[in-house]
Length: 286
Image (cartoon, rainbow, N blue to C red; front, side):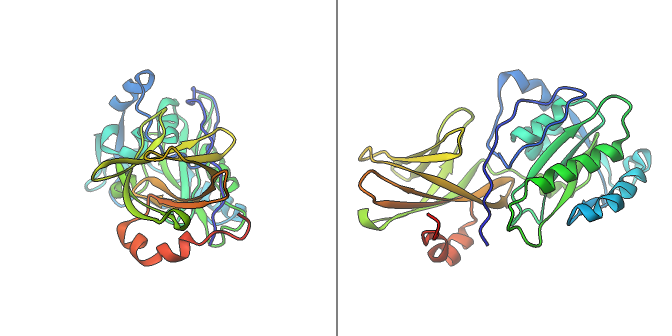
């Protein structure tokens, strides 16, 4: 199923502000937000599920959020307070940092199941606002950012105020990911490693060094530049879903001579081995 959703980079949330973003899972450790890495969250033992499949479910989610007993959850079983750095999705993604930068009440929601539903939203409210209301706003913002053809997708609250409401392993964030590149006209079929730093292009590397750069523009377009030849391919990205905190995507681009290149970034090695042939096929609308 195709998942079409453009990534939107937003400024950090301020207290009493409300923002939501598309699934921009690129690392954003910047000096201005370094102090946010010293924040803490309560990892909840057996966290309650606050989730929706459609706007019709929002009243049920609001009731579930209103019944959250922070003190009871914090004291439950293996619940404990941990540094935000131990929850990489919060400190290594733009939306996670937006959440941490906001004063409570605040909520963070992500597509469900995350493997196929590439949407994420962070919302904060004015002091005194009901956390349940903020949770509903975050869920609604997340639903609004799901692709139009995202059948079976919903959204779940990841964090509410200082409570983590998903299992800790769901906050994983990969520092490097697998990639595959194919350009039949150029004889390229490569398995690579993708690395990305804030404010810089993604680098696709093999054992000998950088093979290509992937440059993203504010208008949603993507440029793939081959290091060896300097060839430049311009095209678009199809976000698919989260893998270890990063959005896995399919990139399709052409150069000035009409040669095509397809790049898969962020998929697990097994997925690349088993599904690459189908994913490399050029979309009809491309």
